[in-house]
Amino acid sequence: MRPGGLPPVPEQTARTARAAFPGGSLPMRLRDHLAEVFDDALFRDAFPDRGAPAQSPALLALVTVLQFTENLTDRQAADASRDRLSWKYALGTELSDTGFDFSALSKFRARLIGYGLERTVLERLVEHCREAGLIKAGGKQRTDSTHVISAVRDLNRTELAGESVRAALEVLAVAAPSWLAGAIDVAEFAERYGSRVDGWTMPRSKTKRDRLAQVFGQDALTLCRAAWADDAPRWVREIDAVALMRQVLVQTYSVRTDARGWEVVRKRDADNEGVPPGHIRLASPYHPDARWSAKGEDLFWIGYKVHLTETCDTPTGAGTDVPRLITDVHTTTATVPDVKATASIQRHLAARQVAPGEHYLDSGYPSVDLVVEAAGRGITMVTPLLADHSPQAKAAQGFDKSAFRIDWKTRQVRCPQGATSAGWYPVTQHGRDAIVIDFARADCHSCPTQANCTNSVRGTRMLTLRPRELHEHTTTARAEQHTESWRTKYALRAGVEGTVNQALDITGIRRARYRGLPKATLQHAFSATALNIVRLDAWWTAGPLRQPRTSRLERLSYQLTG
Image 1 (cartoon, rainbow, N blue to C red):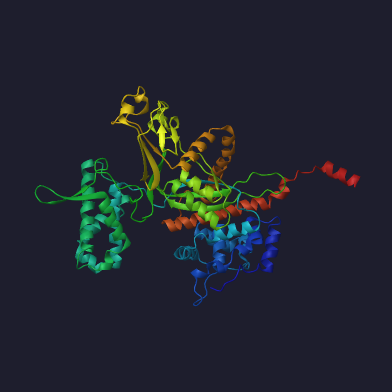
Image 2: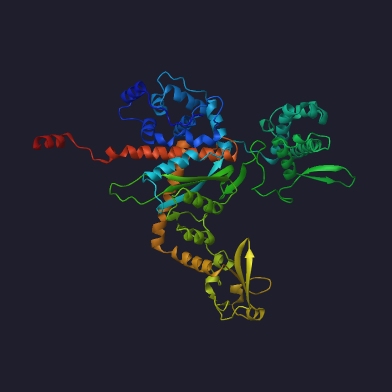
C-alpha cells in the first residue's frame, strides 16, 4: 500500500457530474464534505510496505460506505462504481475507468477483521464530526438495542446433529481423504450425508425420527473416536468443523451402557435431562457464534444483538441545530443481556472523547452499581431502575423493603411492628457486596402480621440490602421516576426507536449479511457510518428547504419597491 488520500476528481468527471447533477447527489456531497475522512493511513497496519501494489483501502472503504447507504450487494456496488457517474465523482475516477472485481470488497473486509479494524471508519467519522463541533462531550445521548438474525437456517436438534456430521465429513474429504477412507465406511456415509440434512423432509413418525437421531449420534461418536485416536493425526481434531461436531455431540447426546453391557447413544431429553444454556448452545455447524434467544412471548431468533447510541440534544431553533448522529455501535451475541453492554458502550464513548452528560436508556441497561459508577465519570444515566422484586412488592400487599427503617450507624433494622433485627451480615452475592438482615424467631412467630410479612418455612423475615450508598440511591431513584417531571424528561429516549427503524430501512441492520460475530460487528459499524452519512447529507441540503417559498406576487412587489 502507498499511503495517501482519495485521488483528485478528474476535470472531465467533475464537469460531467456537475452538469448531470446541478444540485449534487449524496455520493458527490460525501466527497466534497468528507474526503479527508477516507485516508489510506487509517489502514496502514493491515497492509505491508512491500510487495505488489494493493487496491487503495480508502477507496474500498468509501465504496463500502456507499454500498451500505443503498443496501447493495458486493456485485452491485462494484457495478455502481463502474457505471454510475456520481460514484465516479466520489471515487475520483475517470469516466472510462473499468472499476474493480467485486471480490475485492470481501477481501478488504477480511483484512479489516484480521487486523481488528472493523470500526475504524466509524471512529474516524465520529472524530471528524467532533472536531467540526457536530458531536460534543457532555451532551445528551440515548441507546437502544435490536435483534439481528444470523445468516443461517434455523435447525432443530436432530437436523443440527446430522448436519454437523455432514459438515465435518465434507471438510475431511478434502483435508484428509486417505485418513477418512481408513476411518469410516465411505460408501455408507456418502449415501447418508450426500445432501444437506436440512434439504429433505424429516420422517413423520416419532419412532423413525428418534431412530434417525440415534444414527446421527452414533456416526458422530464414530468419527470423534477416530479423530481422537492415538494413531490419528493431531491436526485432524483441530479442524473447526470436527471440533464443532464434537461439541454438538456432547450437547445433544448421552452415551451409556445398558443392562447387557452394550453401549447406547441416546439423544438427551430436553424436558428431563435439559439442554445447555443458551450462551454456549450451538445453533449451526457453520456459524459457531450464532445463539438462540427470545424477547417477550413472540420474538425468537438465532443470531446477535446490536446496540445503537446517538446524540439527542434538544433543538434550540436558533439556527445552531446539528444532526443527530450515531456515536457508537456495539454488537454482541443474542444471549448477552443489555445490562452487560452498558459499561462497554460508555467506555467506548469516553475513549473517543464524546461521553454524554446524560445517557438515556431503557430499563434493561441499568443496575444501581452501573448508575453510581457512571455518575463518578460524569455521566448521569436517565433510566428507570427495576422495581422491588420481593413477593410482598409484587403482590402489592404486606410489607416490602420500604416499610422497614434502617439505622446504618447501629447496623439494625426495625420492622413495621417495632421489632429490631437480630443479625446484620455483610456478604457477597453474585460478585456484588450485599447485607443480609435476619429477625429473631421469637419476634416473628408471635407477630400478629406474620402472614403479611413472610411465608418462609422458618417463619422469619429476612432482607437483602445493598451497601448504604447504593441502597439510598436506589430508593431515591425509584421515588423520582414516579414523578411527572421525570417522565417528561425520560420521553426523550423514545426517539432512538426511530433510529433503529431507519437503520433497518436503509441498511437492513436486523439481518446479518455475513457469518461470524467479527463480520457482524463490521457490518454494523459500516451500517452506522452509512446512516450518519445519510443524516449529514439531509442536514447539508436542509438549509434552503427551511426557508419559506416566495410567491411571484411577493417577488414582483420586492422588485417594484426596490
